[in-house]
Every structure is written in structure tokens, then in C-alpha cells.
Length: 409
Image 1 (spheres, rainbow, N blue to C red):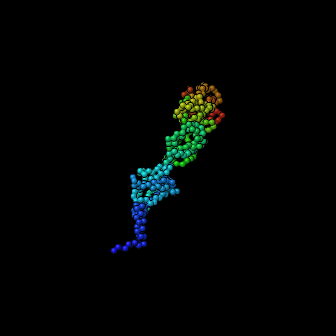
Image 2 (image 1 turned 90 degrees about the vertical axis):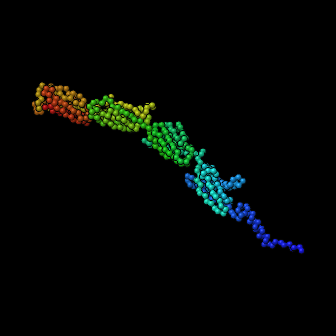
Image 3 (image 1 turned 180 degrees about the horizontal axis):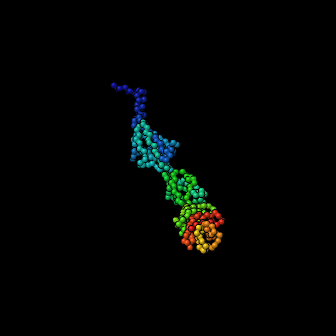
């Protein structure tokens, strides 16, 4: 008996076809019936923390024949996305022109484990700008800190980190210098002839306008030495005011006492010639003393001022009058100034109407003495040995003789 042939039913055919498709899909995906995982992240600028667009992101999984590589790029906000990534460990690397790349073997590379049908959001990645062969413009204006004028003359040197610009004009900074950009602070030094060195630290990866930079002028000092000071003036120690002029402008001033023997005038701009004038009680300067710095001096100029040669005493007539109750005819009367040594010669008293009154008066006449000081005058009677002293202030505000009256007995 021959068995009858049996044909599959329509339902069986459909079931067989469905199982075949399911098998093929599962084989293609690596796991039957499951989709691959997804990964997303953001790339930021390390300095601004803004998203970086156009970064090439490469994902690598496995090695050898089992190695799989995927690529994507960040969008305008720095975001990136991988889809359909097979199960397993992936290493993500990042690269963009102008930034330090993050290679697959770098410590900052991202490692992520992908699981089918699951999403992984990796930590933000921060890329550092690479300033190699990139330059910024640094500019500013140099002014004299003393008078506020723009410094336009002299040789200047500008240093930015290891870049040195020699033999420049001070005004070149107004145009600016192309300086290699870098992350972090950059030491800047400015040296201009006859000015103190200026240093600062600049930061920034874009063009920098430093505005006005005030440079302090280099200065020198004059050490003055008093010469030919009379002993009595030295003993009284009068004040002296010293002024250094350049043209009609006061450059520096100083003060001191003559018995200090010297003085210092500081803060004179380097290269500036000055004229010294001094004001001393009882003296008038004959004329200003020029001081011209030489190119080889070391910041100090020594200058002497002589009270004999550079000054003249301000003198006034003093009339000495001797009075006494016992001045008699034939006696010799005289006087002198104790400080200056000025002498009123001895006069022999003769019979006159001045001796008829009490006290009796003898006029010794006039002599000139310096003004501005208290001077001691001593009158004496040679014959009876009596004497007297007076110490008046000799004023310089009168044209008539100042009368000094001394009682001797």
C-alpha cells in the first residue's frame, strides 16, 4: 500500500518563514533578537567650558580580527552620539585641529562598557587648546609716570616669556607685538633707556590691550658738600634749602643744616642736567651751579658749594654806642663782634658834651656784619677793665644802620 503524499499547510509555511527571518536577524546583531547599545557625551573647551563643535570622536572595541571601529562628530553644542554599538568595552578618542588630541591610549580617553538595548552617557570630556603656531597681539602705550607724557624716544626692549624684541622704539608697543599664545600667565618685561624696568604677567589667549603703562624714570642723586663755612656759622647750624631746576621746572628739592657738612638731592631723572640753587639764612647765592651728568657715572654726582665762592653774606651797618656812668676823659673805649671778629677800633674819649650827662655816651661808629643771626657784641673800657655785651638779632630789612647799645660800667 503506497502512502499518500502530505503537503504542509499554509500556517506551517508561514511559521517556518518567520523562524528563518528571526534567525538571520539575530545572527546579524550578534545576539538573537536584541539591538546594540547607544553612547552619548559632550566635549567642552577646558578653559571656557563651552561645547566644542566638529570634534572627531572614534570608538574602538576589540582587537585583531574582532576589532570594530565607529566614527561620529560633535554638533554645534559639542554633543555626540553613537548608535547600534555591539556589547562589550569601547574606548573613545577625540581629535580636532587646534586642540590637544585625546588618543586611545591617553589617560583622559573614555572607556565605556556597552550593553545591548541600553544607553550609556559618558562623563564630559574637556579638550585643551593647542596654541602651537598661534599668535596674539599685545599692545599698549608707555607714559612717563612723573609728567604723564608719552615716551617716544630712547631704545626699548620688550620681552614676552622667551620672546625678546630688541632695539625697538617705545612707541612700537602702540602697534603691538605678535606673541606666541599660551595657556596661563606670561611674564612681560619692558626696558626703556633712562627708565626703571617694568614687569608684569599677562594672561589670555586673544589679543591684549594693556592700556597705559606708567614707567618710572631712572634717577640719580647729587651729594653736595659744604665748603668754606665760617666756624661761627657752622656752630649756629642754619637751615639750607636746595632746589634743582631744569629750565623753569623744579626737578627735585632737599633740605638740611650746614653743620651736617653735606646734603643729598634725590630723584633727578637720568640724563637731566640741572642747576642748583640754595637758600641759606644771611647769605645770597652768586648764581646757580650747573650739574651735568656724564654718560659713565654710576647714579651719584658729587658737587661742592662754597660759602666763600658761591655765596655772598648779606651785610648791614651796625652802629655801636657805648654807655656808662664812669666813662672819663682820656679813657680808651672799643668794641668787637664775637662771632665775626669785626672790630670797632679803640677810641680815646675826649672832653665833649656827651660826658656831661649820666649815663655818659660814646659813639664808636659803624661797621658791616652779616644779617639773619643773633650776634654777640662786646664793648670794653681799656683803662678801668669794665666791659658789657649785647646779643641782638641783626635784621636785613633796613637801609639805616642798626644801633646796638652796650653798657660797660
